[in-house]
Image 1 (cartoon, one colour):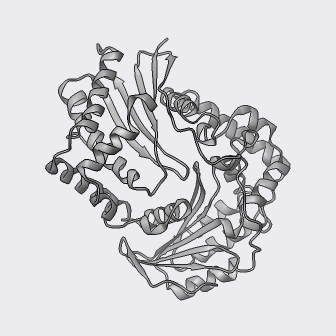
Image 2 (image 1 turned 90 degrees about the vertical axis):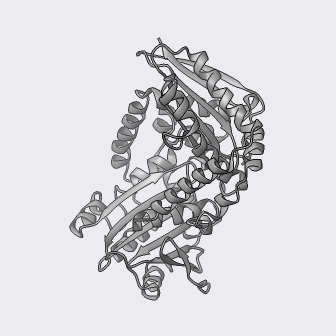
Image 3 (image 1 turned 120 degrees about the horizontal axis):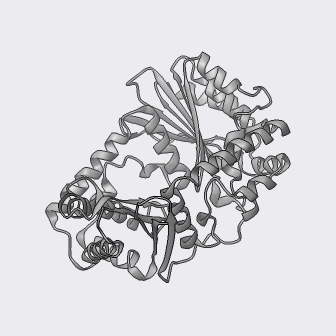
Length: 424
């Protein structure tokens, strides 16, 4: 096991990094605000790692992790959590899957017992597999009933083409129906191993005893072979041409989604795009909200988000026309504001306000131990945990010139997807 680094203060927690001999990355975040401990186990596997035939496997496997393992029968994870007064959850993303537990600080090691058992002894009983597949299929059907969800999925598919980022995390009915327990068992063996995971233990802990407990439960697990994604190339398409889509829906909503392929998480442009998103729709005083919603009444809602990932990201812009607003009029106004970002320098005062808002939000994200653990683990899985809770250092480096350059290079009209959902 590698020696610990010196503690690094993040969101009021003293964070140390360790590496077990089997490759498991361990982050211990000591903070004694409350007598609670959150344990989050991140696996570096998400929908990005799936072949077309495996679409939805990562999310389906997340469900099956609660359906029985070597030492824990179906329902035992939830029962133990409830009996001990704790909470648990899990979530699947494009680049990682995470399992989250929170307990009082005198009983948190139960989380380690559960996660170590699920890492090496998942059962995947065929009857449970078939039953849970029906649950996932129902979840997929519910998503097809939401116009915004459908619009975003169609946009992302056009944006990324055959790259796995173009597929929904939940997968497709055809791929889910074709999966077998043996398929999932092989997938679990490929990716659910210590060398492909980050374990975060955060809260009211003593680091030395916490590390000893981690070694006890995880240290003897074999590292396994290096996992390899199923697709041939990690490079998504560059988005060199504009694409337009038009969907219809059984209501009177006129919904717009614009999306651009962007950059990997942790790059300088990632932070530029955070600032651009806040400039456009970060609160009632932001450019698009103030003008299109508050003053001119052209839109009932407008929002932007910077969604960077391991291979590449997406910059999203959503808006809905107000009654009486023509779709082309709203689109033209949005285009005008985007051109303004690329052609005119943001003033020092506006940039200062926006940065203050971002940094304040970042501080707020680490207020709870669970938020602290999730942010550290997510950044560790995707890029580097040291980018989490950096006190706004990277955002403070963003300049008016950088904003204009990034807007011109990444948010141009000739490299985006524009999708409208209009009344049928």
